[in-house]
Image (cartoon, rainbow, N blue to C red; front, side, top):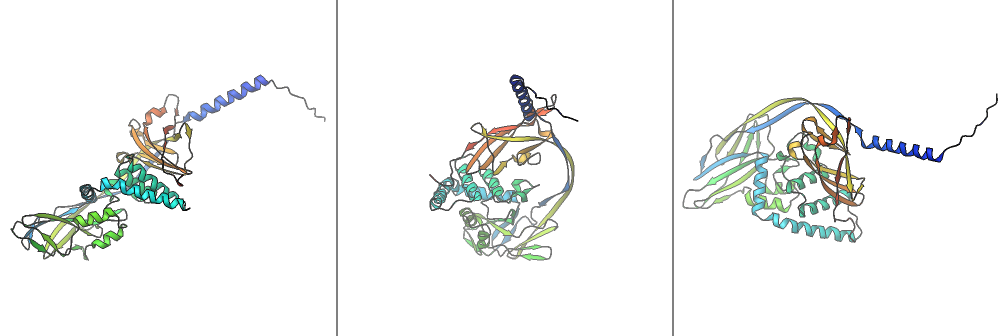
Length: 383
């Protein structure tokens, strides 16, 4: 059998038209991805601990009227924030960070290159100094960069100690009490509180100021808060004055029914209620592709961090280049803050996303979530 090779003649115009048609078709498929959603069932247990007011509500110790209040993590954060605001640390903060930035740059000139983590933290300082993010955003991003963000899953960020707080053990709050001492007499009174906490059959003494200072890196913020409000071995209450001090113990056991706080020779009793709620929720999440752009072109980041509003923390999730939005929230406009390290440059931007505007149910396709990024001035190696 003989095979004969028959030459085929190609028409250049037909070939070109075919290629154009193929490119148009491929581009259309690329930009109009099919709608994707994932059904997730969440099963777990949610524990909420509440501590009652003390019994008795007030006692008399050495001529002083004394009250004790348990401080949950949110109230502790509020107290720390008020103290730092009163002491003017907010105004000084930008100046102090700017000096630190100067020495980072000076070290770089001597040949030491910043690590990715140090570089991201340096840029984060600049974002805060230039008011691109607030203090809460700074603390949340810093936790992500340092690798502790995964510990926060399933819990409100408001429950976690803020970065400036000395009343924390990692991402957990110490067991804190606010003691108010009122002197109604016409003479100053000095008192030794000698606080002791009883949890079940365990006896705990409070942390010392030095211990709390060392636990959290001994920052200027820690020093200011502890010097302002933490208890001393002896406390002097001026005539006709009321002062308040904080006492911090090891973390609370949520399954103890009572906490007993001893001050001098008197006792305060706090009832503890731990509400246990089972979770069994099924929810649909639509998936979209994140498409960041810098000056019209895409970037390929090596590290990316996102701030999602706390009220959407259970309804919006970001993994790599995908964002998942719960079906019940696709009509909501959610502002997301993005922070990127791309090779040797830092970028940031805001993304306003509404899932419903990216979905076309008639044509059964979805659009990418595109957003613009801006470059930070911070450089790894100064010019």
